[in-house]
Image (cartoon, rainbow, N blue to C red; front, side, top):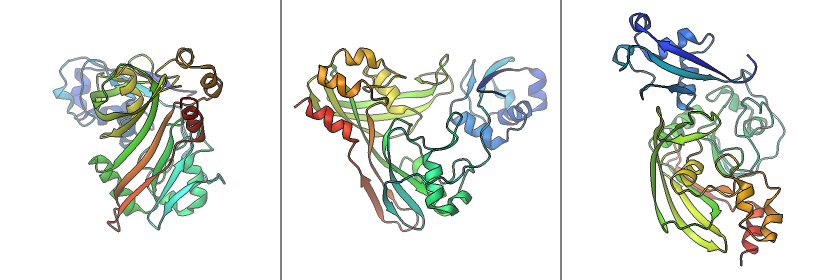
Length: 324
């Protein structure tokens, strides 16, 4: 299979009679895909139920329609394991169980279609060869992810026990995650909470969207830190961690996309509102101005409080300097 394809399936009465669970049915239809992979596709919003909103373990007989139509985005095949690569790491903290790094904008978190090498996982594997044994072979040690264009603090597990503990913390929302974002100046409340479900966009499968079938609850807290001329500087805290959550919530619920976010906004139109100095600084910058400033949690093994924060990339200082 070359590239991503979309498979359309209809769950008829015969399928209901032959299979108990939804994921069992999908395994029978998707040759070479295990239930674990099916679960990942489901969690990443790549399985879209046209007529309803139900989970992967649902019994087929409980589906509301006799002929339920589903769409499955089948990703391009990826290597079975990631390889170590000598890529520099900005290490903030490390012990025998975990490593905390400052991920630069432009670095992909783990191998995926279109980015099989040159990722954070490849870099960490070179630094920690034993990481290959931890978790998913293609994403060893990974317990959360930052988008390619997002910079900032990330934690990677180095032991299986820590991997399980960190996953539990993220699942229970017991992680402090603080972000910074730059947007165009807008008439928005000085702070608030944004709530919706988030799932894969119905027509543009590269995007996520609010309030779509199969979406998962998403909660984002924000406050305006400062107004800088035509730009607003936001502090954003995640209560949940859905794919593209901050970018989707700001663009959809606040109607103010992250500055330079080409997927959820229009950088060309954004630049038209800025002075020439800012245009010159940002015109060639290829990433959204979104930064994961801080990460805090209780260490799963030592039970100590872990908290690290890093400043945004240098381009942010240039933006701030133009708005003094």
